[in-house]
Length: 96
Image (cartoon, rainbow, N blue to C red; front, side):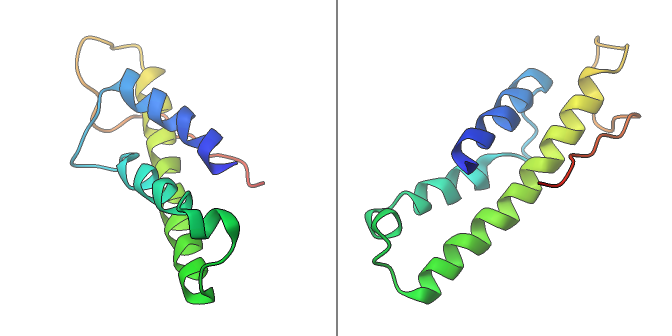
């Protein structure tokens, strides 16, 4: 599920323009790579490792949510001639 979600913020980040100084999708990509390790997929990792995977995915998902909100805010602004640093419109995702 998280791997599928990752694509949306990644695309929005690209359309807005990647900003390495603010929230980005890099850490979620890294967390997904870790979660696809053979021990994680098979379920043979130790419990503290599974907890770490879950914590990383959760924290990095929150950062990706910020990317989505900021990107949508910037992309919906009428001025498309300059890079948007702080959108005037605020977006939030509904909880699942």
